[in-house]
Each structure stands twice: as structure tokens, then as C-alpha cells.
Length: 155
Image 1 (cartoon, one colour):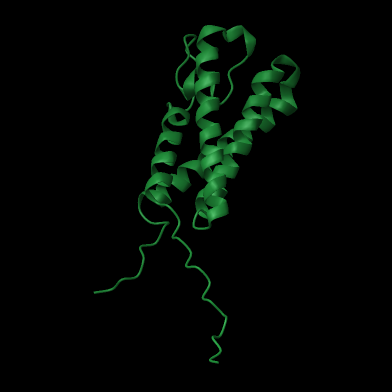
Image 2: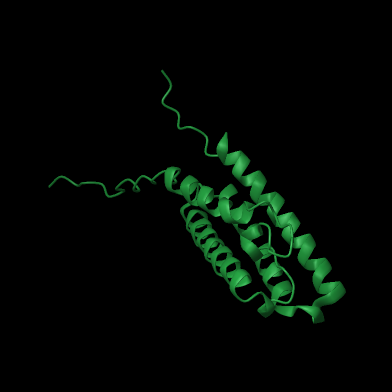
């Protein structure tokens, strides 16, 4: 029987990274076009789209390298920030939609707005919960303490 550790990036971990990468590409593309073409129409919404792109890029990289303790912590911070952003922007987009001017990636929780706006199928709302679950169940392996290099001298 083999006692080798299971690979971190298999199964659901790979799917999660792929979905984060797709969201990173989608949010980046959307924000770049919005900022270049019509930033003056809704600077807050388009800045939020750019911020979400940065968060998705960071979360993707952090999940890929989450085997190291530092990247694992970065992944937690990025995904908690993502969840907070989705919940805050999503809630505000329903309560005070005029604040944003136009929808952002996280508007209406990434779903369908009251005006018929079609977002990202609520993926921005669901994704951080899966990301946090995956991080909680796939902690990096504890590093063994360095062996004691002192040599005992007999007297």
C-alpha cells in the first residue's frame, strides 16, 4: 500500500482553478473594454469590474500554488475579499442600483438583474463558497521541523 500524499490539484481542485481562470479572463476582458470605451459613463462600476479581475487573477494563482503556506494564506485572503465584494456589490446593486450607473461583474450577485441584465449565472456568488470549502479541506502539508544539527559531545 502506498502512503504517498494525494495530489492537491486533482479532481475538484482542477475544476475550481479552471473556473477561477475563466472568471479572471472574463472579468479582465470586460473591464478593459469598459474602461477603454466608456469609463466616464460609470467609473465606479467599471473600477469594480477591474478590481474583480485582479481578485480572480490573484485567487487563480494562489489556488494553483496553495501547497505553500504563503500562497495558501493569499488564497484565503483573496477569496474572502471576493465573497465580501460579491455580497456587498450584489446587495447594493439591488438596493441602490443608481450608485453604480452600469452593472459590474459582481452586480446582482453575478446573476440576473431586475432590468433583465444577464450576468454570470450567479457563478460569482457560488464560486467563493466552493473556494473556501476547498481551502478548508485541502490545507498544505505541515512542514517537518528542521532536524537538530547540534552534535552531542561526550565528556
